[in-house]
Length: 182
Ligand code: RP5
Image (cartoon, rainbow, N blue to C red):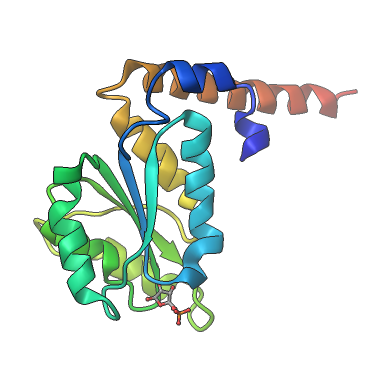
């Protein structure tokens, strides 16, 4: 992740935009600390884009009351996007989406038994009226990029960074293509 985004944002930019020190705009939540190795990829992307965030363990099954409080209050605290990762019977993003007006990006975590298909289907098959934006299995990086694109509607500097990120990816692929012919 760092390599792909390294030209994106200098330290000075991060400080001068005033966002890095501010109230968290993104809530990264996950059902268990065992999800952290995957979910920290989202945090790395937000760090590089200069988006303030918080990270919490919130389980739909083990801490249902905490989940309710978190989901109901996040928007009142200034959170604008929630990224929720869970594995197995992955109810967390859907349950949170039912109690928050915020966009919820769901990250299916690959469990040991069914390879993450259980998680991804439970996130995709939400009933009408309660959407989650579901990314690929274990793809917390894409969840963060989607959060940045959502914030970019309000923050022009985020949009500029996203445009630069996309240009860097294109340049990278073209460079690799050129090298094939050497
Ligand atoms: C889910 O159950 C978590 O999101 C995790 O992916 C899975 C297994 O949790 P642990 O048993 O590792 O705590 O709630």
